[in-house]
Every structure is written in structure tokens, then in C-alpha cells.
Amino acid sequence: MTEIAGEAVLIAAGGRAILLQIADPAIGHGVAHHSDFTSRPLDRLRGTLTYVYAVVFGTPEEAAGARRQVNQAHGPVSAPATAASPAYSAFTPELQLWVAATLYESAITMRELVYGPLDDDTADLLYREYAVLGTALQMPSGLWPPDRVAFAAYWDRRLGELQTDAATRAVASQLLHPRTGPVWLRLMMPLARLVTVGLLPGQVRELFGLSWSAGAQRRFDRLIRLTRRVYPRLPRRLRHWPKNHYLRAMRQSLELAVV
Image 1 (tube, helix red, strand yellow):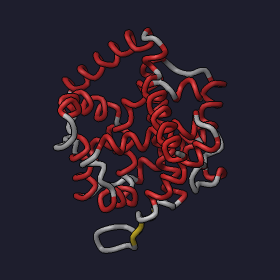
Image 2 (tube, helix red, strand yellow):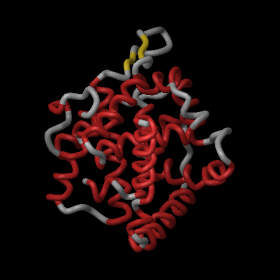
Image 3 (cartoon, one colour):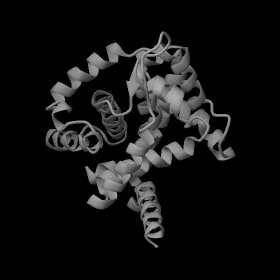
């Protein structure tokens, strides 16, 4: 998992994972009511990537520190059911399972688009290891489907259960059309939207009211072909730069905290 999870190209599937997550009404309303990631998207990205890289690549102490930070952020994220919103809590194991599942499935989708299918042994190993993203929090290990066949059944069932409403569609719109952030981020958003919407399952696009045309599909396919030709030939230090950057920043902040 460490070699694959460190690939920068997997970050391109991050928007897809977020939209899949907020299409679960409990997660979507939790984000809508408690998260500021639409106004601070880079902070959200940094937090998510730091957690993933710390859990996968960090020492046990670093992973524990990342877990504490996530738990602290999740503490206020809960509310009872109302007429307009389901009950939710960020500590609900089933919701953490769905978040981990979207990270795994989105990473595999992106990785296989660029590199081709994994062999069965590698795919099985990677699948088992991805459970750590949920079990590092409150998700019991037994909740992660036991194998890829079971995961595929779980995934199909959960896709059929997803729903959106005005609140969660507004979050998606803010994510895809940010009004804040550095200029370079906003300049990149047309490309990021193409990738995010192109990677989504068709029924999830429809839930969010995201249009998709034959022309958009052709542009997406050309982009994937270009990425497939160029990205694997980049030096490893470039392909793993985000992982190394976020781990280095995390370790520097820990050193400053100790001092």
C-alpha cells in the first residue's frame, strides 16, 4: 500500500471521494452545518492528506497524533434528527466506513485508469490495508467487508442508498465552484471539475444535478490518455512529492510543539 498510496495522481480523485461522501445524507448535513471546507478548501485538503499519510506512512506516534486531531475536529459534529436533516455524528462507525470506502474505491479507480488493473494478489493486499483509514478512528475492523467481492456488494448497495437535497447539493456546488482561495486554485477548477465529474458514477452525477455530455466525455478521455502517457514516466520524487511535503510539514509542527 505504501508505494501506491503515495502517488500524487490519486489526489485527483479526492473531489470524487468527497462528493460520494456527502451524498450520504448524514455526512452531507454534517459537512453543511459544521465544516468550513468550502471557504477553506486547501485547509481541508491538507488535513485529509496529512491524516492519510500519517496513518499509512508515519510512525505509530505520528499516526496517533493525526488520529487525535481528527477526533478533536469531529467532536462537535453531531445533531439529532429534524424535519430537514437526519441525525448524524462524525463518530458513527458506519459513516466512517463509508468515508474509508470512498477513499479506497476512488484511489483504486484513479490508479487503474493511469496504470491499468492490479494483479489479484496486490489488489487483495491493498484492499485489506486500506481498512486502516477507518479502523484508526472508531470503525471496528470487522465492519470492513472481508474481501473485494464483499466490498463490491457493499459498494453497489450503498450507491443505491445515496440521496441529495438542497443543502448537500449546495455544498457540492461550492466545492466545484469555489469563490475563495488563491487565484491558481480557481484557475485550475475547470480541469478539476472535469476530472471530478468524469470520475463519478453516472447515478451520482444525476443526484447532484451535474451535467455530462458526449463532448465532456471525450475531453475526459483525452485527459486520462495524456495522464497515462506522461505521469508514470515522471521521477518518483515528483510523483511522491505531496506525500513527502505533508509528512515533512507534520513532523516540523510536532518538533515545534515539543520545543
